[in-house]
Image (cartoon, rainbow, N blue to C red; front, side, top):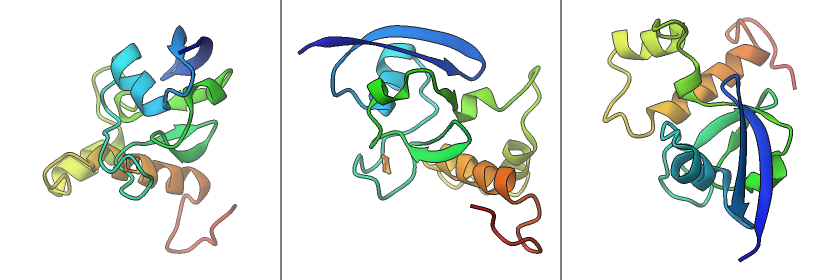
Amino acid sequence: MAKVPVQFTLNGSEKAEFIDSGTTLLQALRDKIGDTSPKGGCHQGTCGACSVIIDGELRLSCLTLAETCNGATITTTSGLAEGGVLHPLQRAFLDTFATQCGFCTPGMIMAAKALLDHTPNPSRDEVVE
Ligand code: FES
């Protein structure tokens, strides 16, 4: 399988790797880069456990080819905490026991973050596309 270069910013750090062409972003993040916060559930785009934010948009990393992310800015749940302090969404999930078993929690947190990034007051504001 052909190796292709991929370079992107992950949680504020520049990453550059050679990956097998056709590797999903989920595989690249977990197996090549070592960020295991996105989880692989269904691997077919239905569960959302693998959700990450790419250039400000919520994306399913299991359906995104890593080689299409050249130059992108990618955020995963492991990049949300700052200085050892949990992001408010992480804190809220923890405080309200919303983590359930914890496996798909990173995807839910990233979905909530993407929603709030686009619609800070979702119960009052109209959703902005
Ligand atoms: S692993 Fe289920 S949507 Fe990606």
